[in-house]
Length: 243
Image 1 (tube, rainbow, N blue to C red):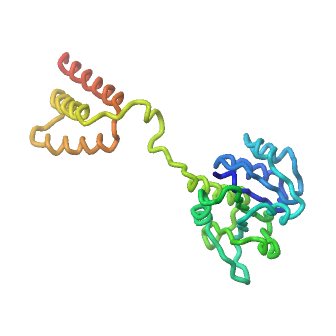
Image 2: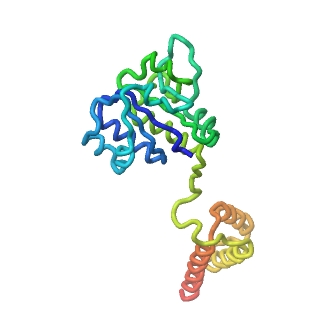
């Protein structure tokens, strides 16, 4: 899906920035990089800054002019933080992603054009774009470096493409969640344990157990975690009897 989105860099001055952009793209599963008249490319600085995204650099296509670079693209966005004298249709990076990720017809391509590090895109280059591409920023400090701007746009495309954050890290999913019957047995065992070790005050038992249930219900224990905790309960009970 994201292979239809092409990142285009116009007259990049520093080869390290090209490498940093390649890394940002690969982080978000984009790979289509096009370069318009870069000052230095290929270059060792680009490879070093790519830091594992050398395949994106190897696949980069180099063009002499922007019209050549976007010739086969159907929708063209020009990234710009500056207001223009003539009003221009504009979308934020998120609006762009929501409008076009998963909504393109087969064979359609989108170009996301980023200008020079020090001056951005020129007006005649924006004339070739359908929309200005905006990244909402602090209005008093809205200048992003090139790789950071590309990273934000690629992230929005990645999320719109169906990425879902894991609800937890670690081994969640390797063990089935404990069912209601197992959890009730767990709570009975917990109540017995805190009574055996003298922690439970009879007058507070109902309120305390309700709060403990809230804690463990939020966690969604799996069967292995229940077994571990009940093993701790048994140890505590046995140790209390021996003492």
